[in-house]
Length: 281
Image 1 (cartoon, rainbow, N blue to C red):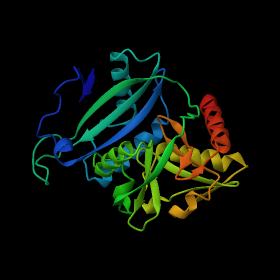
Image 2: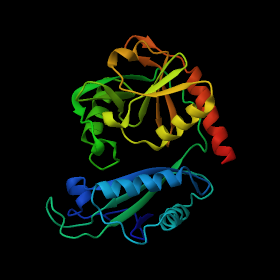
Image 3: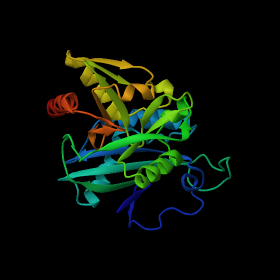
C-alpha cells in the first residue's frame, strides 16, 4: 500500500505522466529506517526535509508538522503489516502535476512507500571483496544543491551502471575540483591512524543523516579525531580504512580499492558505539 496525500491506495499507477517529480526531478525525498514502529533519527530527517523544501522554494503546508508526517509514515507502515519488524521508508515530496519548468501551482503533494528490511539494528557487512573505484565520466558540482536529497540522480544511476559493468560494488564520485565527494549511495569516511576524515558539505557531498550521527559518535568517543576536509584520490590508497554510511546500512566497509585492501577495525568499533547510542536513546 502507498500513502498518497494521506490516502492509502494500491501500489500501482499513482503518479501521472504530468507529475513534476517524474518529468523534471522537481522533488525531494527522505529515506528512513523504521524499527518496530520507531523512526530512527526522525527529528534529523524532518528538519533536513524542511530545509530542502525551503531551498527548493516549495511552499510548506501548515499541517506538515513533525507529528503529522510521523503519523502518516506509521499509518503506512501499519497498512503494510510492518509495525513489528524493520522497514525502509521513502517519503517523497513534489509539486504535483502541471507546468513546464515553471510550476503552474504552488500546491505540494507527497507519497510514502515502505518495504521490509531483514535486520533491526546495525552490523558490519563484510561482503566478500567489497570493491570500489572512481567514477570519472561526470562530476558533482560543489554547492548547496548537491547536498540535497532530490530526485535528480542521473550521476548516481550512471555510476551504478558503470560499477555493475566492471564488477564493483560501488563507485566514488568526484566533484569538479577533482576531490572525492561521496559514494553512489552514501557518505565517505577515510581512516588514517586515529584521524577520520569525511568531505565537507561545501565540496558537494550529501548532507547525510548517518554522516551526522557518525560525526557525533566520533566526537564523543574520545579515541578518534574527526576532520571535515577535502579528500584527494591519492589519499585513498594511503588510508588504513575506508567506509561508507547511510541510514539503511549504517556502515559499509570498503575492503578493496584498486590494489589496496583494507581492514575494518575502527568501522566495527564505531558501529558498536552507534548501536549503544541507539539503545539508550
